[in-house]
Length: 588
Image 1 (tube, helix red, strand yellow):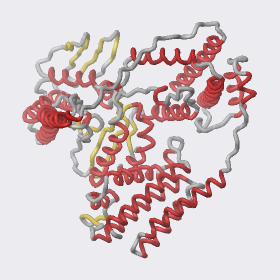
Image 2: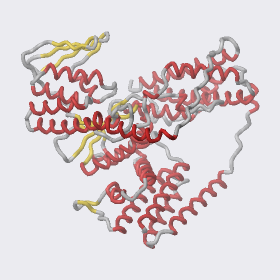
Image 3: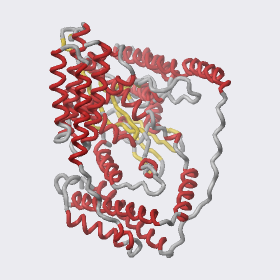
Image 4: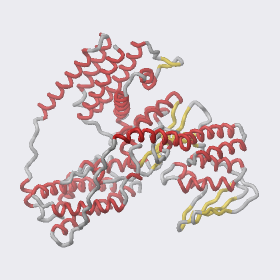
């Protein structure tokens, strides 16, 4: 059954939700004792001594020099040696290639380099024992969802039994059997052995994310992107890795941009991608029905997620899009991936103590407002329970478009089932909570529309060129008028407006719109003006470009991304800031 894992997950979630609400009822009725814990006072922050600023700056400078000498410099050297090793390999200088790859690995023990050396040893027949050791090391040390880990499991015929790995390598004439137990590799011996490993060499790519004056260096610059070596220089292939709990941000913020830049819009979605789409839906639906409660706990704290690295996409790029992709992915990584660090998260003991403190505080919080707030929270949970029940029914019965298909009768009965577990705990709250007061949305929307129009006219008034002013006026009016009926089309229109603005700016200041006889891309045009752009404006341009790509590829991502009026208005404000900056900076 195609949806078996999703169905099992939903069944477990629904069972857990019912168990929790039943336990909650029993605890409130005094049938079971509530959990309690100890309170602990936090330490007071130490005052900052301004006399230490010079010492701090000196220490940062020393750390930067130390890290360059022992970490970042050697890593760049290793990448350079790796490229030379691959070049020698393609020239059939196998011994020279192995020497260069060994030298690279001595500078930077990145798993991509471990794989390369293993492949070279095995395919050249120089030392199959070392080759097998390196390939097995790569398999054992790489993350569960790593692309080559999955491929090597097949090529090395790896099976696991009672924490022992068994496998073999064969070339049609002989076979090397091996076993990994207690972190030791044992294998059968042959006088000589070589075979093909049908996987391309990998080259780690630096995104230059990490501050260079840190005391603890992790070389996270090289975590998220690996170049899959291509013999031809006409295309580039990359394996993209992200933290698993950032799948939502990747799909919503960057997936359409990758499609935009890839060859013919085609991508290789790796094995985990379909499940990540499902997890994105589950995340959004939980967030939709989440209630912060009396202690205002953010959703992200209530539902901590998995930060392990996963291979998510394999992308083939034409050479002319390579630098643009690296630049945009670096921006995405800085905004979304580099903020994730599992080692900075609380350990289990700290989390347990925090939970105990919350339970103790909740036990003391018995005011009428807390009771009302608790009821609203459980009402949200009932709606979540009902929504997931409908989804489960749709998946089991293979209903088309299961995430959007409605079943009102099932929804209402599931919601009532959940609320019935509460018995008479909230009788007063059910009667006391009135219907939501209707807002005068027409008046509010009209006021916001007038304000946007004033901002548009203010920006247009400063444009000197009548032709540019007329064209931008038409584009901006179109984007504004689309905000209410179609926020998605409005955001897409803004991306096209940005492209028009940058082209006209380049023409005005004398930049060539062509390179090597071809029209420059939006990225290349932005590069021409980037030296005069502030970091704030550069970030706004990035957001308009990437979200605009989402809008332009909306049909391919339906159900995974949404656009609303608020977001569209925010984008238009960003665009107006960019236009105002360009007009004043380049005097257009």
